[in-house]
Length: 173
Image 1 (spheres, one colour):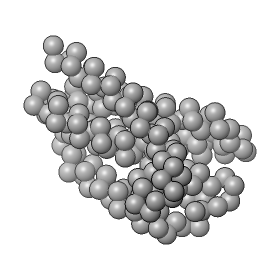
Image 2 (cartoon, helix red, strand yellow):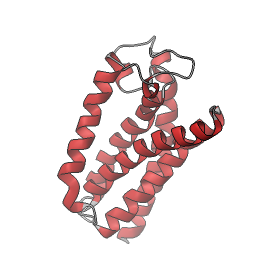
Image 3 (cartoon, helix red, strand yellow):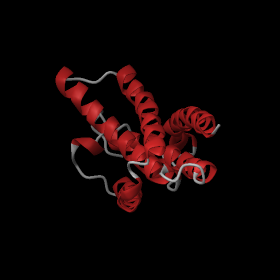
Image 4 (cartoon, helix red, strand yellow):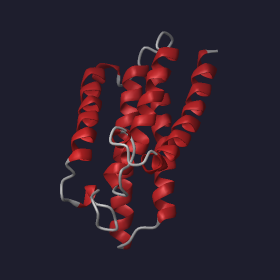
């Protein structure tokens, strides 16, 4: 019974994060470039800004997932924190791997990377929640996730002049 509940929450999470992440792609412009909205959504087309489209929806859903399943799956918090870090890492590594090999990027592939990262992250969450293998690393994972939140704020305001923070069109803001 518990496994079915977790599975359904994982499937709902994939849908939620995919939908909210897609919405976050447009929200900054729709808000009239609202300063506050920019901390949680992409303010340009850089790879770093696009990781926000995954990170914040996944963080929101992870809080829900942990509250809903924490009693039955003691490792769910560390599993969710691992899933968040895995998704952000997958987006960055996948983009630079394929575009580095190809020498260019393709929007369809970029978009696909986002959705694949969502699915892979939730698979990681599911497997780790069942196995409890990451439970001893929760504090470290939480610190890293909190550090990422701080970096999103800092780098939204002051993006470094390196490719990760620069849009393919050459702009950083």
